[in-house]
Length: 151
Length: 333
Image (tube, rainbow over all chains, first blue to last red; front, top):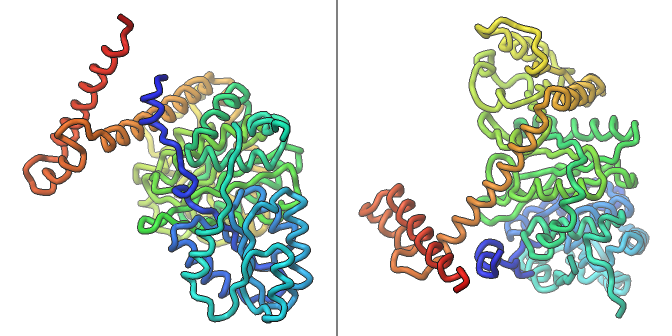
């Protein structure tokens, strides 16, 4: 195959033109998934490919889905108040499967005083009540990790 | 930094992280994926590819979950490719099949990958089979491809899978629906899901009676596959064992009848033809070297000065003329 054909037939996919893949998951035991669904819908409408796994996700389930789906971003929605327990467990589970390279963001009811603690765990940003969806979308676009691998 | 082995070597080594990452490159037609596939392709051809198609909400994902259970019970490593539609407006997608298969999260013998159709059509994604090849090289068998929810006419999966399961749901019309051409003709196995519902017996009966509406005398001919109609209830876990048996029977028939070779040829031809079509369209659209460009031609068509048929002919003719020039240039003096 000549170089010319290579160029024409299979143009390289620049990192920013491929769809961003996002996992939207709701860890913990509260059953309020409206926020997660709103976010999943907004990400979809922003052109992202959203893997939606819904309610009652354990840290291990989130890690497993993040691994197999190779998502760029993990979006966690939590309204139970258990974030200080669940988030460290999720970050550890992601590390265990080698997915600590993913951009992790969180939303839901996280008190202001907890935000610095949550960020110290490695969660890149917290989107509380009243967040504009376009802000969350812009954040993901700006911060989705760039990759480099050998075939 | 010490050099790390490439993704393909790590995939062959059983590295799941590398597998997941490579699937992304392959899905995106990235050069990294294409080169890795060059290396992995000789390791493929071992897995049984099972396609599942049928209407949205027909119970495909839940049925796949039950198939995983059956195959895991006999120690098989199962890969699932679950395709959901992309938005025709934004290109985004919500991939929600995985939610029916969450219970396997801690089983290393199950790998589920969601794919967006990216407007490919036919209920498939452009690189679904390339993803299947990668799973094949990684040692998964069977590989289950679940299509987008489909209707009467999406038959593409039957040209890519070794065994195609066509899911039919009770309560979606009378017996006349079963007479119509299209998807019903391409299933190797017809699965009536939700058999816990009363209408399912009627549907299974209509589908079976359809098979008797033929002028050909039923002959005992081993070269002819008799499409079974299997009733399943994922809710009650009924009929799944029969379905798994039917899949195994079909595979055995493919081997014994010599049809496997034919089917493999058809699959390869379909895959290559699809790539050719896409490459040609990309070449035509990207060729600005002459005055008759794709964009210019489209304007002519919109203005009703040229028919779409003649526009396509002209653009393809231009392309082949260009390639003749290029070939002559390439001939060594």
